[in-house]
Amino acid sequence: MTARVLIVDDDVEMCQMLEDGLRSRGYRVSSCHSADEAFNAVMADEVDVVVTDIRMRALNGLDLCARVVANRPDIPVVVMTAFGSLETAVATIRAGAFDFLTKPFDSDTVVLAIERAISHRSLREEVKRLRQATGETPQLAGLLGASQVMRQIASLVHRVSDAEASVLVTGESGTGKELVARALHELSRRRSGPFVAINCGAVPEPLFESELFGHAKGAFTDAKEKRAGLFVEAAGGTLFLDEVGETPAAMQVKLLRALETRMLRPVGSNVEIPFDVRIVAATNRDLESAVEERRFREDLLYRLNVIQIELPPLRARGGDILLLAQHFLVRFAERATKTIRGFSSAVADKLLAYAWPGNVRELQNCIERAVAVTQYEELVVEDLPEKIRDYRSSEEVERRYTLRVLEAVGGNKSMATRILGWDRKTLYRRLEQWAAADRANGNGRS
Image (tube, rainbow, N blue to C red):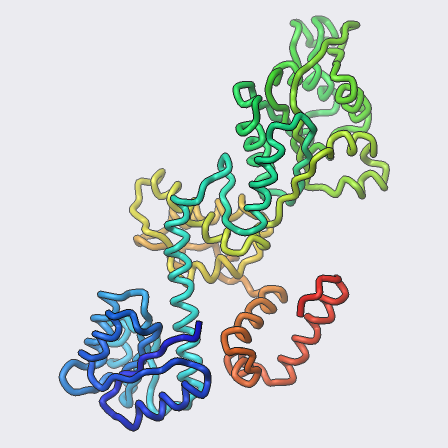
């Protein structure tokens, strides 16, 4: 929707000049010539941004700003004045103004301030919505997300939860693969049985077979007692093979045979015993490449990968970043017995810009740290880890931001270049580079 801007100034000519300039940029603009009239318009929810002069008859612009902030904190106020002293600037900050403009100024300066104010308001509204969504969005056994890709994954998990076929969950480290495995178990008819997990990369190779299949008494030096393996412990439930790509080569053959025959032979025993488990495996490795490099058996991959669930990296989940951040904030604030309402729009901006190489696990650690160090009832940028505070946008983040700016200005490239601080040649060159990359990747985006 086109942003609605309210100009407040008792100088009729100034209002008319700003109205004309902003309308030519596509804004919906109205004017008020007194603070009282403007406050009534704000309370009637007729505006998105207020641009007000300070010096007016009766109630002045700073008083108007303070009243708007107190009653409609969702509406940012930009204050303009012909008297740009330090004292005036401090007064505007104390009144809660979003921005401060000193006359005379050109139309580009006003537009830039309004664009920043609109972006600020949008982030505030998104944060508010996500605070509500944290309590309203149904969770899939702890796997939180409202993005389209996560809704598709939730749908798939529900559809295959009761199937007996093996499931392979793939994705980068920290994306929540074990949460998906647990969700599959909790939604299945096996939910009353045990959920047993093993990290295949953490078990020493000589103990791997015994850990999975168990051993007979005296099977090896330290085998003083008979021991059931994890396949038996998980009977009637789910066995989760995490980091299955790290399974030793010799063990891959034995694991494949067990999965094909549904029988196992404990180490040191001559008797095969049946088992009844559902297998869910997970990996952050490219197992198809591992097959080509002869590091993983192709037939075992087929046996494990009957159903595949691929988890996206956090950076590809859009607003889920803020939804998860709010979820973690509530959890850690309760644990620390702190009253923390949420996070500022500036924090939201930083969280959305960061690439999250550690995915959800890194975000969780970030919010836990921020809750621990904050001194306020709202997380601020200074509470974030330094690498996130100082993160410089990657090319992809820059691309998304550029396209958002173009969308906001209705495709007006001249206006976009002024907001971005580029010349037209730079903008056209970047757009062409991104379009060429998209064509090369076959996704057709521009």
